[in-house]
Image 1: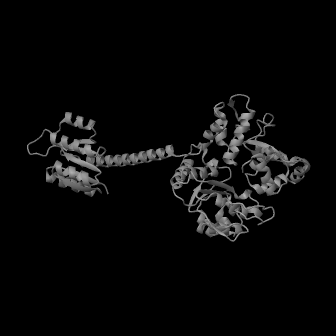
Image 2 (image 1 turned 45 degrees about the vertical axis):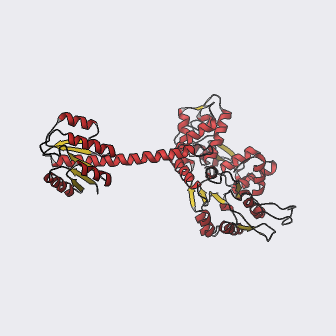
Image 3 (image 1 turned 180 degrees about the vertical axis):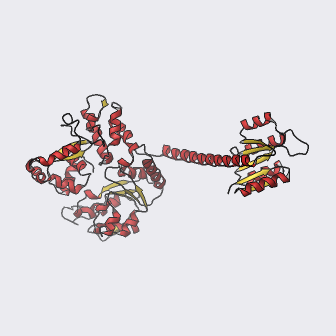
Length: 494
């Protein structure tokens, strides 16, 4: 309930105004002198002041009200004030209204007019205070971002802004953080920001891709191994936890950790204690753990593939990173960053880029930009450079058939495929904004036996299968471990 202060030397006026305002849902305070009014303004939460202009008997100059007005303004610059007087002085009224008086009324007043003014002024004052608070919050937030290390991240959307704000807020603590989101959305960038803005930023920052580690060597990689602990272990080696002691350990693709590894990870998170493989000596470390996954861990818990107690240890705070198609305001800033200052975008191309869903997220967008820069015939990149066409839904087309099928929607192309012979049938996949023809799945194993996949083959397969390693390995006719070895060979990050 808003409180209105009534200042008038006439008790009957105060009583009448109080009754009218209280009947209309306001709380009122009354006083009879400027000195008392200033004391109440300083002590109470006042929404509006209705003040007389004269307080001394037989005085009609309005100077007392003028002084009170300026004194209130000095301590509460935004407080709305309605000036009320039986002696209408137009010049004084104009002067005070210019100085910020909200309204000026004569006695006797019109109840409806006064109530309407009171309601409007209180609403405007509340909105002004809210805007001021938002402006202060925005200024504080921008100051925090200005002083923060954002690790080169590029964004323009409110969704990404909220993620970064939360990351900067929790970076100062040492709690475990779980980053969730689809492949290629930028989870590793958020992990970088968490470490770079934490008190541990000068300490070790060790990154581990759980999905890339062979299962038989997983424990040795995480916790270390003594010489002779397994075949090929010729000397003792420290694990990732020891390497990260005193700093931060980033466990990517944590959903791929087997149950045996989950038990040991839970222990080290709870106590900081572990043993190297092949050793009975208990070691102790202090490590902040940041983990990331594109899996639905709640579903994995329900199916028994992930321990619930470990989930709660990892997920003290969750950072949920939306896919790129849910933060479209990031697309053009990212494109401009990837293509550099030597290239620009036509307006239709900008619209096509924003309209395309980017199932491979930022990773797919980056690959598409690299391809466009290489294929560009001029400094102004077009939809053809990105393999996009200006049709409903902005469906991509293959670079080889872009000219021949410029007017043919991809849905029509897809409908024509079943008419081909089974041995020649091809499935159309969308890769980095381009539609690429790949042999049918039944021929993929034979193809992989005929030649060694190149780095480009692996990148295309990763984009085709949204980074799901099991599917990529199957499409190339490789085991997961063989695929990871080739990815490391070609410097390809998952």
